Structure formats: structure tokens, C-alpha cells
Image 1 (cartoon, one colour):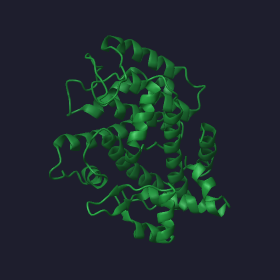
Image 2 (spheres, rainbow, N blue to C red; image 1 turned 90 degrees about the vertical axis):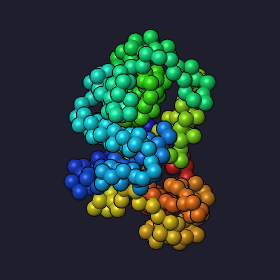
Image 3 (tube, helix red, strand yellow; image 1 turned 180 degrees about the vertical axis):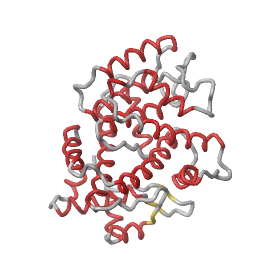
Amino acid sequence: MNWADLTKKQKILDKYRPLSPDIVSNLDAWFRVELTYSSNAIEGNTLTRQETAVVLEKGLTVGGKPLKDHVEATNHAGALDYIRDLVRGAPSQLGESVILSIYDLVLRGVDDRNAGRYRDVPVRISGSTVVLPNPRKVPVLMAAFVAWLSDAARLHPAALACEAHYRLVTIHPFVDGNGRTARLLMNLILLMHGYPPAIIQVTERLAYLNALETAQLGGPKDSFEQLIAAAIDRSLDIYIDACRGGEPVEVTPGRQLRIGELAKVSGESTSTIRFWLKEGLISVASVTPSGYQLFDDGAVIRCRRIQELKQSRLTLAEIKLRFV
């Protein structure tokens, strides 16, 4: 997959604009939960997808879970609301104050001393050999970063979002919350250019962190860029599928389906779903303590996309390449 492929798919989505208020409302609600759950879980938050939905939609706490995890969920959702208010602007207008405001929302109530300010202490990434910048260099590096943002219009919007994510997390300007802030900034840039936000799935955590580390150690950035491109592509599929249906896509924040339920919803046999799973065309969202595989609404969207591509007479091997 490359950036040009995303342009083609965005043009398909553009044909449906302006989207109906029902579709926008439904998708915004789903992405709010999914982005919050996945971004926080990548950083070690213990709330499940369903628990995140309960916290955000009902304002309830989950017994046995740390208060910090609840605050992180409401903070991330609040930061998402904040960046949605900024989408009428342009990346060239994204100064340090905006980035610090996003970070303040991420860390507020968790670490008020450091919320909204650059770090003044050395930090390391647990389990990594990446050497991060000295704290004295952070203000200079951040000034250079926003200067780069203001002069990066030549880049493809998705490439710009990806690179901004990489550069910010590599500067690592904060004591904590660098990954969440970088992903929020990436999605703000995508939204500014008419793309849906990209979700890095929890199942991709290791691949995501490894791809980042490889690039930060001087290796190729290809794996990281491909992972981000695939995440954007998935989100475009979700939006396009909702528009083609003429009504909001049937997504419910936190919903989990067993394989038989996924087969019924998608109109396929259970054996077909198992085969697609084996081939890596769909993925498991979670596994119950008793061993049952559970699938989220992203799997429903992916099944519909596979069916659509099969109708175009693509082989499964060709379809698989579309999802790499």
C-alpha cells in the first residue's frame, strides 16, 4: 500500500460528502471509544474495550480497575473532542501551544505537575536501546518541529501525519504520554485533510513499537509507514461502507461477536470466517478466559470489504495484498 492508494480511496469517500448527520454521529461515537481504548491500551491501560465504552458513555467507574485508568480514558476522549474543534485549520497553524494543550488534556489529573509542559529530566523507553534527546534540547527540537510542520505542505497528507507522529514521539518531549499525544496529533492532521482518524489496533502493538524502534535506531521507516497507511485504509473502509449502505454502519462501541455471530452478521459460513482468519484477512479482537475468540465491528467491516473485492473478481491472494 502507498499514499497514492489512500488518495484514490479518499476520493471515493469525497463523493458522499457531505455525510448525513446520522452517519457522522454514529461514526464519531464509535471512533471516540475505539481510539481511546486502543491508544490507552497500547500504553498499558487495563480497561477493556467494553469498559472504556461504559466509562465514556455512562460516566461510570469499573470495579477493580485503577482510578488512573478511568482518568486516562476520559482525558483521551476529551483530547479527541478538542482536536475535532481544530479541524478547520491547517497543519501550518499547529504551533507548540496546540501540542502542549493536547498533552495537557492527556495528562490532566494523572500528573498535574508535568501536564502541559516539556520534560526537564532525562527519560528512557522501557525495554528499548533508543537514546532520547537531552531535556535541554527539547525546546529547540520542538521549535524546529513546528517550523517543519509549517513548511511541509508538499507532503501527501497521510505521509505528513505519519511523519509528524514519528518526529514527535522521537523527540519525546514529555515525561509521559508521548505516544498518545503523537497519535492525537497524527489524527488531527488527517482530519484537517478530510481523512478519518487512524486506529492502531491493540493487536498491532508489538509491530508498531518495533517499527518505531527500528526507524529510531537508524533503520528503514518502511514498516512504520506501512502500518500507519494500513490503519488509515481501514478507517476509510469503515466510512465508505457506512456511506454505501445509505445509513449509519451498524457499529456499537464495545460490541464483541463470537465467530458464529460474525458469520451470521456477514452472511458467510463459519468455516469461511475461520479460513479468512487463518489467512490473516481478519483478526481477533480479544479472547475470553474460556478461550472463545471475539471479533469487533472492525471485523464486520473487513468481511464486507472482502465480499466487495471478491465481487470484483479478485482472488483471495490479491485481496490479501490490499490489506498489507
